[in-house]
Image (tube, rainbow, N blue to C red; front, side, top):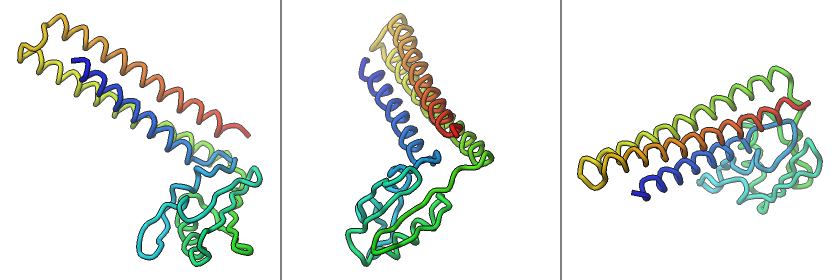
Length: 184
């Protein structure tokens, strides 16, 4: 019985982790390796994460530097950056690829905030669906006479508390990211 709730809680926490990973890749005006490390690069016929092809550093607040391990991958890395949603053009100098991030406009900030709220809402939907699945499993256990009606009600209340806590966590993450984006 406790396994149903533990499993649901673990999956809910995973949904929050995924949300936070998505937020790490959202541009806030400051350079961060998380902005590019997830980019897929066509490398010898395979899609490879950028972090496996180059060292990523942030030498300045608005600059990301990429040091490819294989000089032959420079052109492919540049293509991947240009195709990405970053909206920037990389500059290559002596084998080092530099990405200079321009300051965010007010309009772009507002668009990013909308996207963040949408991502948070999607995470909350996932969490609510996990709660619903847990409730259905509890109902099945009661019908099979594995648990009593009182225990079912207690476990449903516990599932609701876990759900409320994780939804609050999603809201907190969204609020933090929104504050970070709107900072000038």
